[in-house]
Length: 214
Image (cartoon, rainbow, N blue to C red; front, side):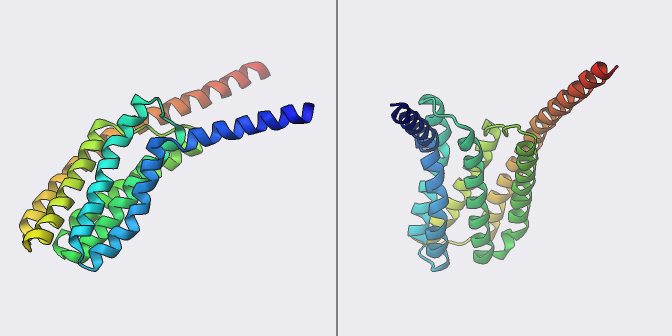
């Protein structure tokens, strides 16, 4: 009887874990990661219409996953980590494709990748301190939306009108880079506050130990 109860409890715990992982927002983030490969294949094979559809789909899931998470009360620790990872992998993949497509945008793409790399390092540092990274803020989402808009417009003009304009592409991606640098500064402010709290907690523990020793 006890064994049956233990199995039932274990089953319930496993079920709870699955529910926390397989939420709608987390599935949407996973889908964004999955869409990266077909996007790269379509883009490099000059199937721009298919590539545009894939990147638009990816962008829409990115815009709505956070909203759905809050509306359905499905905000999870995994989601806070998975969402930015999906964003960064998508940005890097699209950035590389754009550099191949039009080398003039390479400096802007390098800035975007550097910003995401720094944010990734900051997130890893927080996780090592057992601190959950801050969820995406509006300024981060604005930069991401601008990035998707720019890429979709560039790909759309190429796919449907065979229109290429390096200046337009550079301006659009430069605006995107400016928005993302602003987001980086704001996220750094949050990161600094979180790390300060960690240091204060560690200092507090050390002070308590010293007082006990005395």
